Picture 1: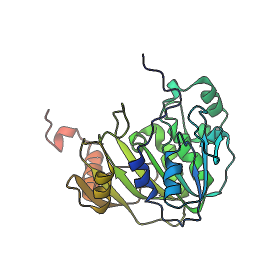
Picture 2 (picture 1 turned 135 degrees about the vertical axis):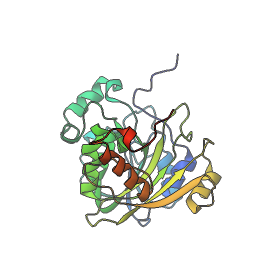
Picture 3 (picture 1 turned 90 degrees about the vertical axis):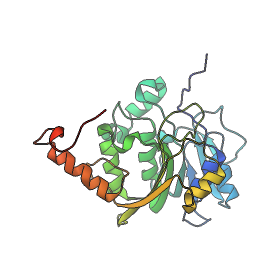
Length: 274
């Protein structure tokens, strides 16, 4: 029987970690944090890219390797406020109902979780929120997560919180591309900048292939030479709305259909088929 993944850990391939580190625009002297460092793949990548000031936090002491800059602690209970220039990583994915009792207890006493999340949210939500708290002004947050929270009603408060504190610079959407062993889900890499002056647009790159990612594929995605890539710009997201990763014209059509359905049936505005 496969052992239970108690802490929602899915190890990031080094090629993906390097791709994410290359999205950093801050200088090499930046103060960097990896809030769920696992076996240290992001720490290795940051060091290989000549970043020096790096701290890793890992709750599961079994995973901690021989890194002098990793502490065995829960990121949720750490008190960071406006301290880091760069926060990067792969937060743990696990639903509330599957959390270990000690993690539920920890979240139950966390002010931000109780304010912005609920029992339908994923554990990764609190890592996004706490990371934004820990960023300096103009700091960069780069995470890989599932995309489910972009459109679910129960994640609306978190999406609003993100938009209140900054803007999304870019999103790489991998649809059903296999990234983590044994996981079937749709993943995104997103970059958030903590800045109250908003960037007018978001750069969206969507990759449509079920071929497992490697360095060559990721390089071709970034430079736009991959034939399975569609790239476009969309306006910044707005509060209380779902985050739709589609060209502006498509979003306008969707909004038109939704508005029409308020006083008509769907059959009045489009054909229905199987």
